[in-house]
Image (cartoon, rainbow, N blue to C red; front, top):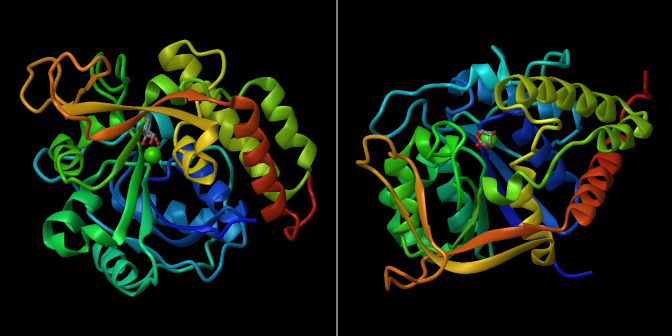
Length: 319
Ligand code: RIB
Ligand code: CA
């Protein structure tokens, strides 16, 4: 067994963020050092409450949770209540969280972890990149302490918030531009690959078969998400975006990548927030990112189910 990779998840729970937290906490290949939250799918208050809810129901203790930026760097916040509901995590009923948030700002927690951890840490943003951009801007000396940034965001093809732009990048394009131009190793897991992670009825049946409280919460999250994606996008099954970034850290063989130059469009009237991915080197610019292009869905679901099973084993019984 290789040494677990130390990671921090920066998220905006969010149904798929919730599953990313569970995968990171339940898989032995990674060591979840902290969870930081940012405004995106919902307000910062709601994404932070949801992170605490997920940690509580999964029995994730000893992992600090800290709230970060309440709005993007430049443009106003526009939440995705149409996708994730009024709470940001509609579907299941959650008990009052027993896990509490750290008093300080997420960027200060990230700074402390990067400074004190004995080896460089992998950052896994599954949300708008506001916290990460602020960290890199305020503490550029910490860049060498970041092993890599493996993010869910962008797309080599179309967007989902606009025809051109994916939600995480579109919500804060200036932050994304800072991250892609930072020089820190970046891996981009975009919609082109996360749309392969479809929670089909067969996948839901595997979560149901766990018959644990946590397993059933995952079923209710995925059922809500399925309704959203059917209604808004005509999907027969919902794509579970964020855990794909965690899967890339767990086992790079699960998520095939190519090196490419990626630019974030900041000024296009119809394309602001788009990730322009030069897969064929037509711009003559050096690659600044690894771009995910393939997913081993069999391995992906096996690892996610195993993580939820491991976490839920200690929880109360099923329905
Ligand atoms: O476009 C998908 C991304 O936007 C995911 O991270 C989802 O949680 C939302 O934040
Ligand atoms: Ca997210």
